Length: 296
Image (cartoon, rainbow, N blue to C red; front, side):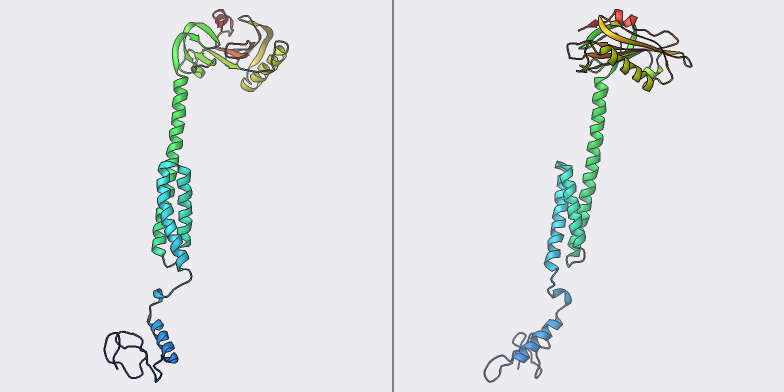
């Protein structure tokens, strides 16, 4: 009897072809397949199959995770160009799926997905860092442009206009009533410096201003000028507006500071102004700047 697949002679009683392994179907008198022989043939064929050809329960699940890991890695890289947070999330999910699929039959595919997802995470972190740094640089550049220091003897703001006897380095942001004016490279290195801060304090009126100003100025001296001694305090006026003025002095450094809170409703709504004049080796006062001050 010959094999029906390769046509070579079969050994007597063989369950499968010794040449090609094709199962041998013996037929009895009833021309039916012998059940024991068929079962033995199927078992022999299965035994000849390599282990990786046999179906495993985890094969399909691992394959899906490996493919998704690869796909999420690609989406994560593309996401870095669009939305960093989305790209980072896809990269992390892809790495998790790739790690879960490492022990499955698709370990090479899962490894490729893990590598790609890791690369996506790194790309998104680099892009994120660049965006944060760029935003900080832009913010600093905008602040520097807005508060550019210029040498001048006059200053014009939405709240007031004033002149200085000498030309000073003036820092004033566009549209702001706050300012710094000093005669050195910086305010800390100067022997003559002015500072103005403006604010809107809705609860402060002319009736309670003196009490409010006294507490605020004394507290400021205590916190920011701990080595200074208060020499005088008085409720007076500055450029026609109610003011509370405190004069202080640091004898160890021979530095004098006069600080005043002024109540004035300006055109931009500011109603409390804090004016400071600091000098080194000379008396500090607000008389000079007051003589050139014009409210708006």
